[in-house]
Length: 255
Image (tube, rainbow, N blue to C red; front, side):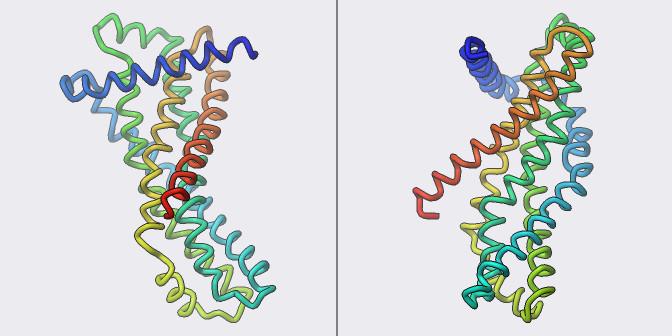
């Protein structure tokens, strides 16, 4: 396995380079991209994923609320629970949870779709017709992810606040009005945008890894399942790494 690491790293860098090179070519030749698939992709990645990402963020908000009450309540600082929910979810958990759910759901779907096209020789057919698979297949999928993941994150932030409100008011004497007032005072532009800004980058990581695994498929149906599983694992790992790098950057910038 260790001997395959340099090869895998080389393949990853090669695909990243081809994707970067495809972007200016996309602008120069818009017809080389399958724009007709974009509405379908946005529907599948965004609207269809909304229930599960919303539920996940709602539950995370409830968990943060319960945890905040149990820990801060020991010091009589329950009043700071709304601020804890805002900071923890807006800056870190909101983008991370949303991206992980999207990686497990949409990343697997994109990888299996392209892998199936690869084993059925549809990708080779695209090349024979003069289309670059990276521009035709990868660019619209990454664009759909970059558009939808920030929107899903924003909706998730709202539901996390509702979850924190429900958890806090259920087990403390804090009123809903006091919670909402404290929450509105805790929300700042820096906190909000620190989470939203990283979402497109997390989306690109998911899209590039899923599409790269799909295009690298060799063999039959068994290879499709293997590549799909690999895509999900690597996407989740990549999302965590990129999120950690953003956290380090924001910490160094004092955000």
